[in-house]
Length: 340
Image (cartoon, rainbow, N blue to C red; front, side):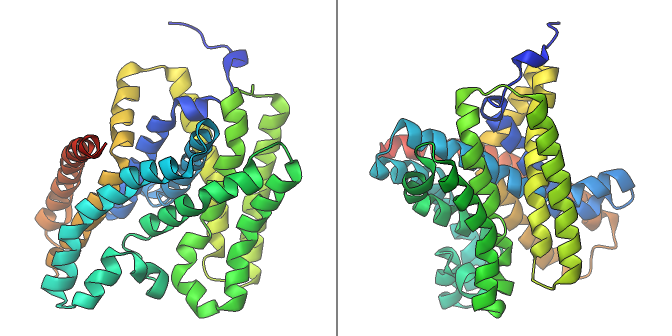
């Protein structure tokens, strides 16, 4: 086996292992949504209950990917077309049966159906079922302008201002409308992870080598940020302010995941995680929709005391989510090819 040299290691691994990082993130998020399965295994339970950090991992590598895309081709029309095919088309196809069942069949509310399906429900009243899709589409919509206004070029002050703005924005919205912010804070606190990915993308693209000072500086920044967030969250009662700690944790998880995969250099593991990463959007949607169906028919009827309903059916649901996401990904790929 080839011995890895530290001198070979660069920020480029965040791009080289992008699909694998997304695979790890979606597995972690899915296990987070089913974390009750592991309550009897303390270590596993502790890890799965932190699975919300997978969102930060998604957003960080998404920021890197969009920076690469805009650097290679600044045509806004083509940028929007690619993003629509990647996110909007899968969402519209996969979510339609769920919203028909949830809003028209169960709730008998056609207005709610249109609000949910259009994603307006999150921004209007904080309905969080697919909040991540509502956020990422907005970020995609404004990204070309962020890129041209702040990221293009080498002016450090513009990039620093952008990062500062992403951290201050939630506080500004809270100051203007606290009640609205309480409904939507889950999205606003996450924007900084997306911006951080876009800022790191320059080093990633250039294959900037890791230095000892960068490693120590990153570690200090992570520890310092988490400590500051803990202190502030105990001093003020701003909704969701604790989520700011997810920013450095998500960054470290991305970096550690890439470094470990680089060190392992395990072909089958990389291929497996890449498959999960490739269909991560489909798996995200399908698993939360099936989880919702499970909650409606099983949890609300009080059947979870039985092992069949508390263990067997959840495991079948997870497996079904994975299989359906793989099939949906292939089907949607064919639809995309037909639209070109």
